[in-house]
Length: 169
Length: 373
Ligand code: SF4
Ligand code: SF4
Image 1: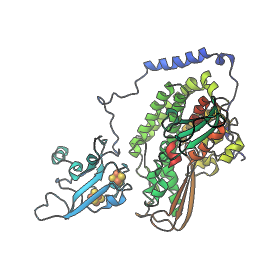
Image 2 (image 1 turned 90 degrees about the vertical axis):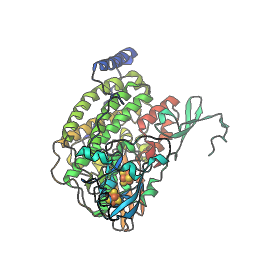
Image 3 (image 1 turned 60 degrees about the horizontal axis):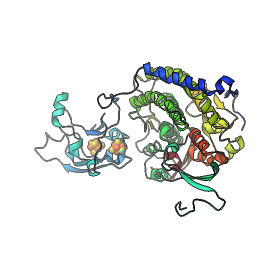
Image 4 (image 1 turned 45 degrees about the vertical axis):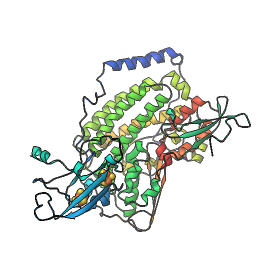
């Protein structure tokens, strides 16, 4: 292959000088660099006492949102499950009965809503697909656990608790 | 081939050992079967497939929007560039282009990825050759890049930021400032990188003249990327087949004719400089406008075959899509750089010592999930 342009850089290959060839200066130089780092600013964070803040767009654990009046936003339309590349979301729809208006915002709601966190790849497509702004990826990490069953998050685990909403307001 | 069933010593008196799949220097589950005469390597045979996840087959059942995510899991150190390749290939099929803003963001992200990948490689190379300190320094700088990624893309390793037609979200308001800070820091530290490892006589003795790969062999094995360029093959896709406006930025292709481990090391080190310079040219010139070209909700490519190649941190990645007009690809094939690069390992390692094999592997910069897919 010919070179495409003349703008390429050839790497310099000078032989080592005698000074470089004896090991001691190289070791001393390396040590001096490492030692100088002792006096620099620490690069580490003492987790778990100190925690690094997550960015607002961080794709962590899912939450299901409520609207201003504390009603569930999700209408079990299934768009999130459709968009999910990992097929992590399963749901069952149910019809809202009279008298439940304070619980669910629309006529249809998700009776069952499960996300299998072991399948989920935290891509954020569900958040993008949702027309009701119901599912969000929050800024928390998924906690570890002992059993596979405990990684299947039910609706109760995902929904924001009621009191939290009042705090927000 | 059963490993236990075979005699450990062959008829010619060669000793057969297994390196990996759990070996600190293989950076993953690479399994090398080595035939030895004393300490001299007679033959190396890589065994693959330990983390085969059938990404190609899986993609055939996913929509064009969704299959992109899987490629982040191939070469996880250049996840952005892999995603970009897929997005570009889908865009080619749809005959659209990303918006100018998205294109520049994509180049910036790709170069940041390349930088972080090369930094990780630098640290691991040091570690493999017995210098522990570089590893920590490399991770310190890499962390700064990861934070930028997290702030803008939402994740640190599997960014999933590229969508057909552009990028997923707009960049974070802090993005430009942080990138500039990090670039300044990296430029300072690159100098330190050279002092601590490059000029070190122990390091040079372990890499110079080790693992020679000639230009002809590099071409015939299909070796690309920094490994190929270290053997004198001009194979930078960014120069040969510019995509996303790489033809508009100024950068040099780094070439070396020596083809040994040291050459591969130097090519990557110099490439970091080039990446920094690309980022510096673009960071103040991000055009205003949309970050995404609107695409239909369900993307359907017309019938046909589409191919797109990009330069990842390790070489040329090719994405080949065969479409039958449906909403998911009929067939996808990835030409992954690591697979071809690994194929040359037998050739390079023959006649070398075991210790040299570590240096060869380190400077090949293998990422195993990319080989197995
Ligand atoms: S984040 Fe992605 S993988 Fe996880 S549930 Fe949502 S769409 Fe599915
Ligand atoms: S979370 Fe959103 S997308 Fe998913 S079913 Fe509920 S409303 Fe539909």
